[in-house]
Amino acid sequence: MIIGLLTALGAMMCLAVSQNKHARTMFARPLPQLVRRVLQSLGGLLLLVSAWAGAQSYGVGIGLTAFCAWVCLAAWMVALILSWRQR
Image (cartoon, rainbow, N blue to C red):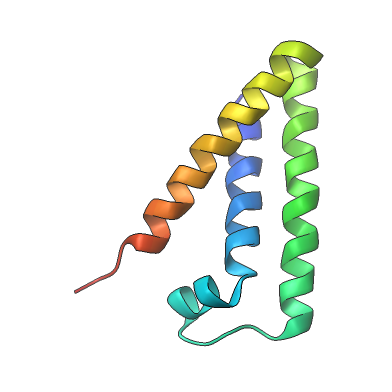
């Protein structure tokens, strides 16, 4: 279970940082195009790994439902990370 959640979190973080707006929030400058493409590909691959982990752990029906829950939780965590700023 924890592997699926962690891979979903990594995937959502890669996908978020591959966007210029979020990259500027995290790194104070946009990332080069090649790095953005690599992060997008890695994010997609990690989402597939997370879905596979859910299907292997719980079976296809429950596993894909768990995958959707992991992605929602990971997206929420990424949103919190990106909105937090030191003052």
